[in-house]
Image 1 (tube, rainbow over the protein chains, first blue to last red):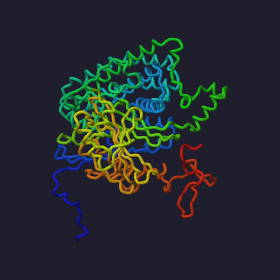
Image 2: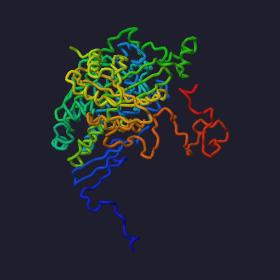
Image 3: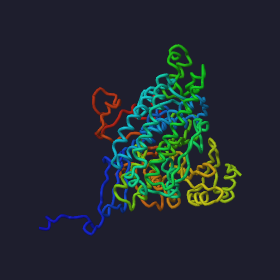
Image 4: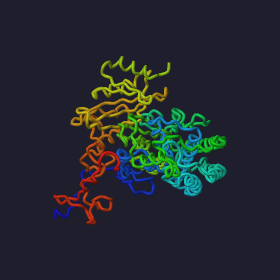
Length: 407
Length: 197
């Protein structure tokens, strides 16, 4: 008779909280990450996060790849804004190698990075809308993300994981079609963004869902290592583009939107305002690029013979170009010894690359400082005491991207 | 007065004397090291001092130097003074057979997962950490994969058809079997230093 009794786990009868598994595959978690929630009714008592479902060991792989083969790995970290990861990696390599980049290349890089920032924030804000129940904004805005994809496709050939640019600049000059597509985007997107804002910004239901939920104070945010829009929503105006300008950001005029309470509504507003600022930066950069005339307008990379592939016509006709081509492709270039840390302002915050080189062909150690990984630790503090639905919106308004979390 | 590297170095030497050493400035960032027992003292000093104010932990990671016997694992802290915009790099070294380091989670909540990741990849035991278990790899893994002795791929996997991955070197269209019957790859195809020529 006793064999027919079901054995329950210890303490499971007296338990007063429900355990809910917000599992790795779930329509509301954006990416694969697991949350085990303890709920008291609908209030969250505690959460336990499990990540690593998309861990691809990039840091280990990078120890066996020459520098240009690491760029596709960086694409796949924050895959919503992969050009920023690529440019950040190239800027790190250029810092190690001591390469000076011409201004036109810097301005073109700024255009591409700000387009990536708009693409990232556009997804995040519209997904917050989806999680609150409003699907229309997301579909409407995705149509304009297509325009950004087309611009990237014209420059590098890929839409999402772009592998855009090379150490020293770009692989080809931007052609007229890409500038026409850029002009089309700059003409059409502002009014779409305004319509999207009108849908949500003063919408009573959206405000009730997002104001006051998932709030964090500036001190706790700094202690948790927050950076990017999440930190700026809490009130700290730290932006890597302003603090340690890279790629000629000091030549541009833009504001840093800052929130007050760090709740979901502030994060939504900060991202929305950053999209307007990015549009303004792109317009300024586009005007600056158009000012280059004649031979200057043909400059699209710095002179880095050891890392930048020579033009194919030269490879077939000139000896030196042939030798450089062979050495670069076969990976026989040795890097200078040194250790460098370089960070860029990614869509989620300070994306840092810590590169240690021992003079070999591949990095000795490459460590990625991934903002998503660092601020996801704070999720328990943000969600505790709130309701389950608020936790879902908090998760999406933090813009958690599993690729960046796990590398 | 602007907070410059020379001044930070003087303050550190004034407080810790001989125990902080190895001052370098690669690419402009002041880098120094100290014995591992002092890591919390140095971090607290850099945090609390009203002039230094390094109150933001940018990142924390480890590096494995298998040739430095007795000091194989380096733990590197990158700190940032946001108000004066100064960064600093602080390294401690520990023996790989006794990799015990005091945890910084009491000072920086950000160190929680960063130390778990360092434990997961290198096996550094952070003494006092609230929840030191693997974070990115599976819990059943019993080795620390980022250490230099482990190759990029797991050689013990039997479910991969090496011929399909460009290894094997035979026309048998199957896995090459070693003497113990487990699948292996041909000697010439084992990964070596740097990319294959």
